[in-house]
Picture 1 (cartoon, rainbow, N blue to C red):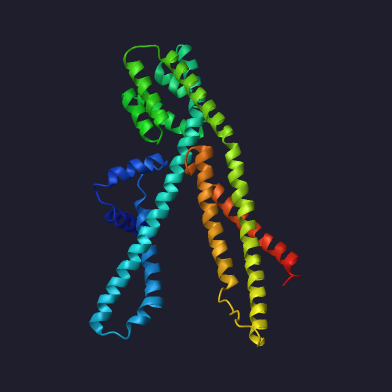
Picture 2: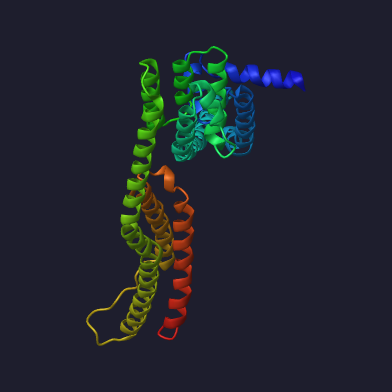
Length: 341
């Protein structure tokens, strides 16, 4: 078992370029991972290889039997390479998407806890503690995301590590401009011998004021959010459902007129039947509603949160909500218009 783990780790390291390893480690630190998961990378390679083998044997190889031996060899190599490359790119994209979301939520939670932490740190400094002691005493269980990293930084400082370097390494573990600016100001004030507690009090006031302004901007945008939500979730499915039944009615009347004109011998012209399939329009409606709901949820996220990542939770709500109402409206309008057809 230990041999397998070592083999997976070494295999994972082989697929990570040495030049990219430091950048990858910095990126993973922002997501909360202290080490690069080489074993996980090696396992992903084997999973992609197994999936590629299954797809190649079941779907690709049967079509290659009619070619010559050399052509089978060439096409097998190309098919295997393309499928393997596709799944490798897919896994990398999914992992990047997951890590990016994890970094975002970790950073947002840290920024919510930062003003309270700085307030406790300032109170400790005013009580006569040294900076490293005040930093250690400010770590509380409720600071789940920020507390553990602050505890590590304070331990480094108390064991003789340079304070500026320890705080800079702390800031590098978060994708936060707010924390980076706060750390830079605290370091410069401490190195110049200024009043760090007073500086931290001003920083806390500025952070709380900034948060209040963001909350106010988010509240002022609620009208636009409601308007977009009603249009996407209610109005759009209703119009598509109404259009489907209107199309069905028109095609039904055209078919009746066509049958009547073809039986008549006095008319100089006849109506031909249309080749429009209502089911194609139903499929188009579902795809259109899906696309509209998806991009509208991103727009709502930008309007309310200021970025797309903060509102990804709206995507399933908008998509499933609009599609569910579409099918409900289809049933209701079908029942109401069934007597006409």
